[in-house]
Image (cartoon, rainbow, N blue to C red; front, side, top):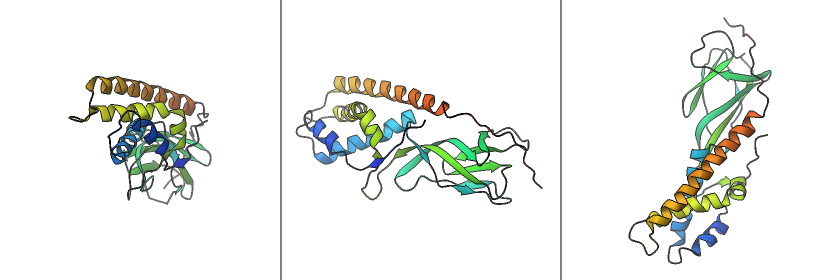
Length: 207
């Protein structure tokens, strides 16, 4: 099953950890590095999946706006489900079967789905700062704590002309970070593929 992502805003534990390596680095810089590591991790791994607001299909309407809200950026639609099953993705199939296509980051096209049907969309997301608030997944904080620290350290050590600047250590932590992002992506693909592929092939009537 897809992991459950509870949202938190508290990264103080990571900040305290980084202070041990970067004694003179301002807390604001440490926090920024942590936030960038979270966002980059999600972007590289697509590990964080979120159900978006349900769409109710309207007669004659194909394109619908989609959003993950102010605190998150959509990366990629992963699954579209209607009451009688999952809808397949197909940008080239012009038949009468239910299908979907994502043409932009903030919209989705739905084809041959009955008017009135409620459509559930699951998408990969990454966090972003909004009004100085940054919300992120506590699951990532738990399961990939060292990964986020590696990403933050890579960024901090790479900063030029600082007391803590160290290009070699930056490269070491960046390599570990990227490797863990790849592992997380494989884990998410595997867990997502275990959800039963109930692709609906039901032909839709339309006029």
